[in-house]
Length: 449
Image (cartoon, rainbow, N blue to C red; front, side):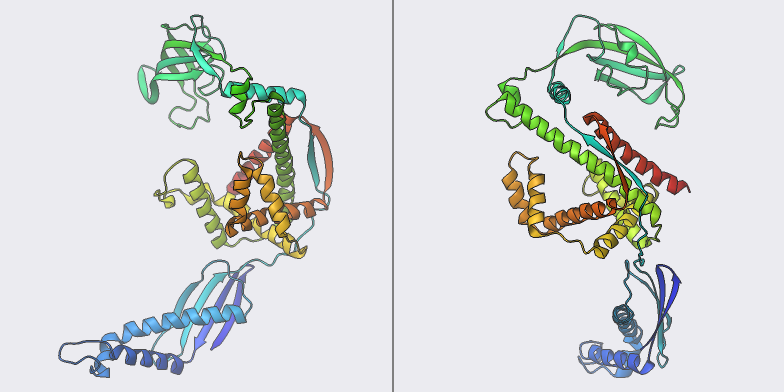
């Protein structure tokens, strides 16, 4: 077998194969003889059909079968012998496929890029320094109270923070528009769930009152036919409800897993969870900056096969997130909604893999268990979580990958200039969230480019 490899781009290879005619024809002849032993044709006993008849009737199909097997087998052998590292499946195309002639075929494939990491030295990384204060703790306890609040009807006019039960219908001019009406809708005033200006105009309304509300839809409103349009809503207020917050008592505390209802234990547990959340926010913010710097310093080509795999994974994730059901055909979702994010993820994955490889990073069983124990602290039955993870090789592999990624980020951080910035708990969470948004917007700008 003759093999030649042509480099058509940094990550694309074109491999040409030539298999001697005698080898192919012998394999076809042997397969035809095996076929002849088992076929039945009218007028012939089983296994007694003349070879001339077998060749005439089955020759093309048998040759296609043999040639397909040969091409796959020779391809697998060649990628090993030629030290090729394919990313995805090849496109294999026969060029010469005739009896008596050497078989020629071409395999076009993508390979993993060879990465020579460029340093991120000089990159400035802002690392939040956060301490959960007593004021932060009090605010979180209030948030938990509000999340568990009850609503009770009041006789007074609606105030911001109240819940109103309303019927409404929206009009563009004199015509009602689709999706602009509802009955018995509960709306918390000040929640920002409705169009800007809508909730404000219901402050002061009383049960039984009818109001006409005028608003303008935002220019970037998701329904294009409504974007920027002036609209009128006719609203009927059925009830005004005030919020009643629960007391921080034994019954309230037990809802959060503190079985003895002790208030100090509860506050300590809340603060512990907030500290863990703050650490995650800090780590994520630092990681975002490091990975962005890594991508900018290493603009490597990305195999389209890997991008498509990641795109499909993002589609499945989106379908699950929006509750589209397990039977939903994710191919209905357009690739362009996910392709840039997928490309970014693949690029980062390839670069981090090289950081891990070049620094010979690894994670021991003890480190994996410690990470699992850290994750398990978030659950009411941590030992069950630990046993579940440690008894599942796939989950352990995922945890190991997360540890290696953390170690890789720490290695990269050694090259950067790190500036500690004091932040409040809320500022740290907001900074991490803003970093996520900037990353998504950056991917969107890449798509435009």
